Length: 353
Image (tube, rainbow, N blue to C red; front, side, top):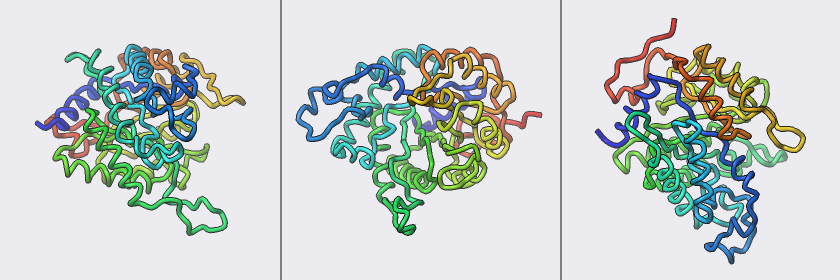
C-alpha cells in the first residue's frame, strides 16, 4: 500500500469506530500569547521592510515552540486531527506582508512542527493525524472587487492553482497525512485548489485524503457566491473528498440546519467545526466550552456528523468538552463510500434507519 492508502485505511477504520475530533482555533490561541512585532520577526526577519505582526503563519519559522505548544494542547485535549498553521500560507495571501519568497519555508516548517506534535503522542491504538490547512486566500475568482466593473476579477484560476500547488507540495513533503481545504467562500477558488492537488498527486504518484469545508455568510445558509450547502456539495463531489462540511461563520446553534442539509445530501463523511458562538462587540467569542459541547453532542446524538471540532474562539477546553460530549456516540452512517475511501477493502457502510 502507498502512504496515502495507508492513511485512508487508518482514517476510515477510526471513522467507523467513533466520531473523529479536530482541533480548535490556532488564531485564537496565538492571540492569547500577545506576541510583539519583534516576536513575529524573530532572528530571521529582523530587517524585513514592512510590518509582520499578525502574520500568524510566519510563527512556524520564528516561534516554532509556541506553535508546537498550541498543537500539543489540542492533542492533549483529545484531538485526533490537528491542522497545520498554514491558513494564509499561499503566495497570494503572503503578498500582504511581502513574504511570498518565504512561502516554501513557512509551509515546510508548519508541517514539521505539526508532525513532531503528533508523533509524540500517536499510538497504534489511538493514531493521530496531521492535516495540511489550505485556506481560501484573500481573493475571489467569482466576484468582482470593483462594484463599478462587475466583469473585473482580482485573480484568475491559474494563479490560484499555481499558488495552491506550491503550498500543498511543501506540506506534502513536510509529512502531512491529509489536506483540509477550509473556509471556502468561493467554489471556483476551491476548484483551483482541487485541480492543484490532483496535479500534485499525479506528479508524486500518491494521493492523500482531502477534507472540503465551506463557509456560509448569513442565516440564509448560502456561501458568498450564492450556493446552498447542497449545491456546494454537488459542485465538489467530483473530487471524491474524504469528507465535506462547514466551518466558521456561526456558532453551532445557527450552523445546525445547514449541517443537517449536508448530512442528508452527501455520500461522504460530514465534518463540522463551528465558532464558539458569535463574536461580541469587541470581536471576542464568549461561548463557553460546555455550551459548544452541548450543541455538538446533540448533533452526534442525531446522527448528523462524522468529524467535529472548533473554529474561531475555541480553545483546548472547548475541544476537551466536545470530546466528552461525543464519547460513545456512533458516527453518522452514509449509504456508500466514494471509491478512494474503499481502498482499505472495508465493506461499504449502510444507511442509518
